[in-house]
Image (cartoon, rainbow, N blue to C red; front, side):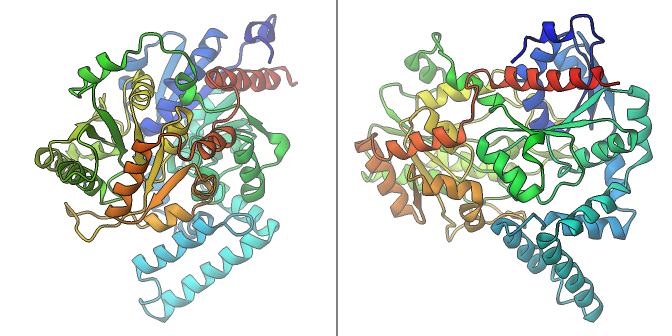
Length: 500
C-alpha cells in the first residue's frame, strides 16, 4: 500500500469527516490507529458527533481535528414525522437480498411483541402489505433499489446544511446507513454529491441490521467472508469493497513484553496461583441470565464439581452502564452480579472503566490492551455468542458458549425484542463459529460445568476448531489493521481530490 506522504506530495490534502455516534463508533474510529494514521498524513479531519462535541474535544484534543455536533434528537424527531418513512424503514429492517435467517426471526418477534395482527382488520391489512413488500424486496433487485430511493427522500434540513458548510471531500461512517444517526448523514452527503466510505463496525452488521438505509460509495470490511455477505445480502458490488482487517484487534497480535500474569492478576485482586474461568457477559437488555452463569460456576467450585483452584471472573459488559436522563438503566442487573459474587467466594467481578456519562460504551483507549491481558490470563472463556469467540481463539483460550435461559431471573428485565438466545445461535456469523467445532455450546447448568471441567483438564480440546476460527474471522493485516484502514481511507480520499 502506498505511503500516505507520497500520495499527497504536491496535492491538496483531503478534508475527511468522521461521523461518530455513541461509544462504539468512537472507539473504532478514534481509539485505534485509524485516526492516528489520518493525522500523520496531515488530513483535515472533522469529527461530526451526535452528542456533545466539546466532550470529545476535551477527550481527544484539537490537534488537526475540528468538532461539530448534529444532536441525535434532531434525527429522532425527524423520523417520527412521517408514517411513510417509518413504513419504509420497517421494510428495510427485515429485508436483505435473498433469505437471511436472522431477519426472518426478527420480523416475527416484532410481529409478536407488537401484536400487529391483533389490532383489528385495518392493522392486519396494513402489516400484510408490509409483509408482502418485504418478501418481494428480498427477491427483486429493482424493489430494493426503489426502497433505497424512497428512503433517500427523507433527510433532515440540519444535516444537509451542516455538511454543506463543511464541504468535505469524503465522509466516513461506521454503518451502511443502518444506524439512525448514520443514515441521515449518508443521505445528506448523497444529496450534496459527497462520497461516503462505510467502515463496517461489527461482524454481524451485514446480516443482522437489515438492508442499507443509504448508498455508500465504498465499504471497508473486516474479512473476505464479510465482503461476501456485503455482496450477497446488501447488494454492495465486490469492486466497491476493501478488506482491511479489524482495527481494535491490533493489540492482540502484538508482543506485550510488559505483561506479567502474576502482577496483572494481583492488580485485579485475583489469586495468580489459581486458574481463571472468564465469563464475558452479554448486554443486559438482550440477555437476562449473566449473573446466573456466575452462580452456576461459583456453586460448582463450592461443591467440588469444579476444582478448588478455580476462580470465576464475571467481566461486566459496558452496556450495563447505559444511562438515560442521568439514570443508569441496568443497575439491577449489575447488582445481581454483585450479589452472586458476595454469595459465592470463587466468583469475582471485573468492571470496565467507563469514561463518560454522555456516551454509551465510552472506555479508555487502553481497554483493548487490558482485554488482551485478561485473555492471556484466562484458562477457559465462557461467553454468549459474541466476538469474544474470535478474541479468545486468537489467544488459544478454550471456548464455551452458553445457550442457557434459566428458570430463575435474578432481576426484572426487559429483553430487547430483536434478540433471543436461540436466534443468536442461528445467526449466520455465530453459526460459522459453532460449525467450526472450536467451541462447546451448552444449554443448562450441568452441561456448562461439564464443558468447563473438560477444558480445564485438557486445554487442547477443540484447538483445531479455534485455529479455524482465527483463519476465517480474524482478518488480514493482523496487528496493523487500523493503519491499513486509515491508509485505505486516505488513498480513496486522495483519488477523490485528484478527480476533476
